Length: 332
Image (cartoon, rainbow, N blue to C red; front, side, top):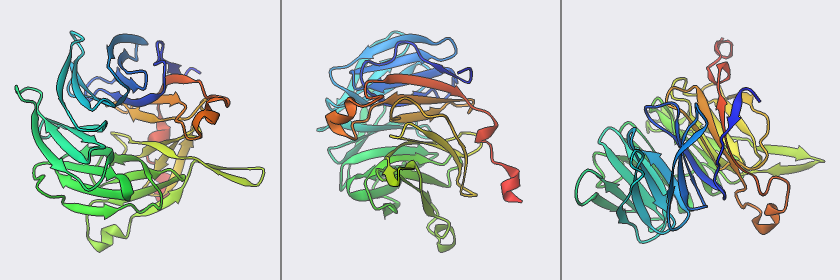
């Protein structure tokens, strides 16, 4: 497939997250349950570094062009020096670290944990931990746009914060979807966010609490298929907004990736199906590529491992084109 390439040296176990550099469109991080974070140059299909951990890595991201961070099942938050390949422990939660975000406006790393807390870190200081913020539930997902942080928790709870004023959330919400939140991504234009659930639905939400803006929010069914008159429904595992066009991609346990224009409520494209479930996707900083992590997500336990695609572990990088652009004729 000329429009995409499979990375060599993929993880040996399921992918947990794929994340591109905020400044270099060719640099990609992949964290996995094989206890590694791998650093790739996707232009040359080269693994430039591999960082071993003591337990599965649930989250990773870039801080800048030479530093990355990992959140681990062993409760640790670590800094990864991409030049020297040195790993530095920044500190720990009291339970597994499920999510990481980087608030670039205040140059701060944010970690979320199953210990029902957020922690802010400044890796440049001797004591890296800056602050600790208690939450009512376990953190599942986080994303940040400008100074707005969205935290998805167990029990379908959401907190929305201004990262400059963390004394209390600016807004608290309950999910518009009936079942457990599986994915979250903030809009590139900073107006809102999208969420995905375990039962094949996506909700589109807006930050502005005014009634006229809240009337725009909606949800829709996706990642579903009728097979021999039986409806099959898959979790929406990952969402990612395009950095230029503000359309978004969704990926599910059905092995498909779709591109959506949330403004006109239409699907723009569905790519050919991958060989297994998709736990994570990410656009690069200039929006020319989409990374797709492919591996079994344990939705069906041990039985699913025996099915077709159960042992697939791969990372694909797809070139994207006009399919991610807003189509003017929809707006006519």
